[in-house]
Length: 156
Image 1 (cartoon, rainbow, N blue to C red):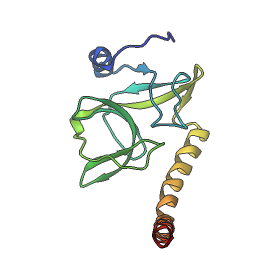
Image 2 (cartoon, rainbow, N blue to C red; image 1 turned 45 degrees about the vertical axis):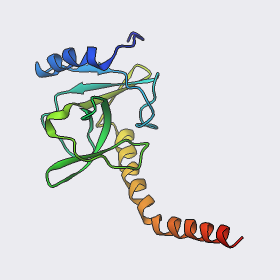
Image 3 (cartoon, rainbow, N blue to C red; image 1 turned 90 degrees about the vertical axis):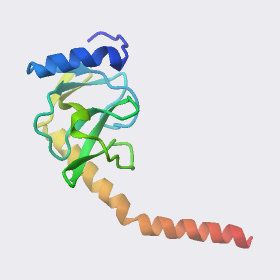
Image 4 (spheres, rainbow, N blue to C red; image 1 turned 30 degrees about the vertical axis):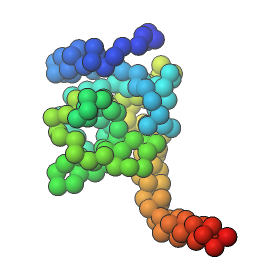
């Protein structure tokens, strides 16, 4: 794969055409929101048409501000998708179905194709979901500790 950088606005028309025809489109994502799974400069993803979406799919979508985002579909609320990057904690809501351009069918790690059926990938997404819920279990304890720290500073 060549190491060329293109703006998403340049790529999207070609991407849309390729996946509309039933093809696959390979893209090297940028940023850190999907770490540790996807690392900029090392990994790329294979995108396909988002015909059937399910929980834990990684989707490429366009926000209302025009930015293109590659995040995991965490759940559906009232039929609407809720997204979050693997390296983030805030859920993103309000993404209309028509804003979803593609979904990931495979990952390339150092030029080796890793299908989403790979046991190590399945282990990763299962552990990721467990860790996501684990952080919520400890939220009351973290909040209480923050309150104690603030009240201690106020007394000092």
